[in-house]
Length: 180
Image 1 (cartoon, rainbow, N blue to C red):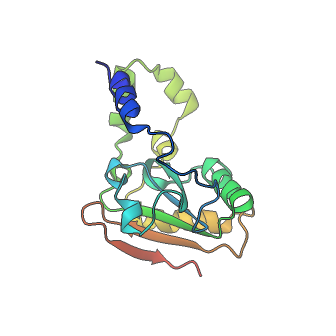
Image 2 (cartoon, one colour; image 1 turned 30 degrees about the vertical axis):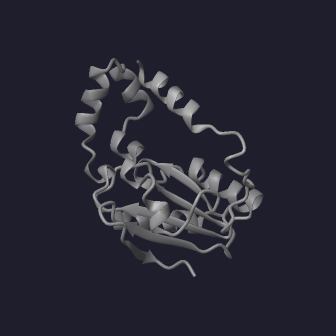
Image 3 (cartoon, helix red, strand yellow; image 1 turned 90 degrees about the vertical axis):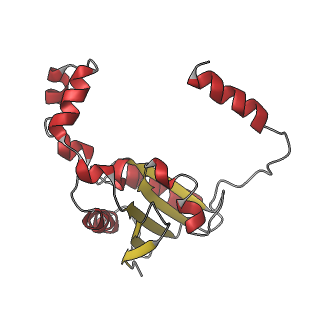
């Protein structure tokens, strides 16, 4: 059985019409979280914050980094603020983040081994580390991302942008930037 088949089978057992009441698109607690895609945060970060399904908009990418100040993260936050009633933003990095240990040379080797044309890498992403959003310190990355979001002319000044660090081992949150 393939992974896809396994997921579809589990989904058939999961779905029970009427068991899950419909939720509104707007977050119940009027805030957005921008965090990392690390699997250790799944079903862990939200309960550690005391939130459930429907409470917050959650945006994720590798390392909770912002590469383009007008790109997808800010676009998603603009949609959340102006279309869905978000009133605060939480940028949440985490300890032991894989993006703090990116080796661009090794990454490029792996890409080439899997059939990616080296010429495509060179022409599309000449600075692989920058494009990946590599950083050395998760706390500094959170501070940088908060600053980028806060300084965006597309984000209203009255929207607090907070920065936190999460521990993927015990669930502890540390405030790095108080956005008020």
